[in-house]
Length: 139
Image (spheres, rainbow, N blue to C red):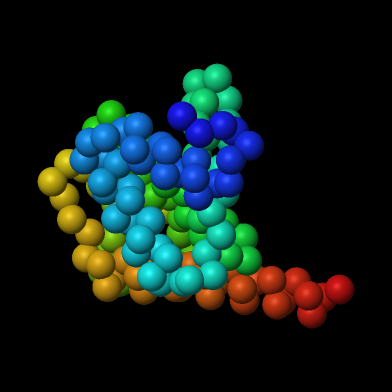
């Protein structure tokens, strides 16, 4: 197991390896698509606690784009500002009742349309960057 002081990318690699099942493969595939959508994505580990000792994988660019979490029966990708991201293909299938976040739950055997997911990530990054440029203009 990697130490908490290891780079976030190494910690995420270790988490995927530890899972060793469909959840790890799914998280790895989605992580690859996130980086394909935006090569400037930064990986972080946040919210490390006793009930989640390996923390949560966080993908950011100009703010949090999404998190990648694994549960017993689902891999969950939660978009921090998902409610404001256009989703005409309706990839978001979880956390729909919230005012800000939206999530994609992927169950064993399910596939997410790759091109649509990449566009969703790009839209989330664009939203983050637009928010940052507005904030800079106000200062």
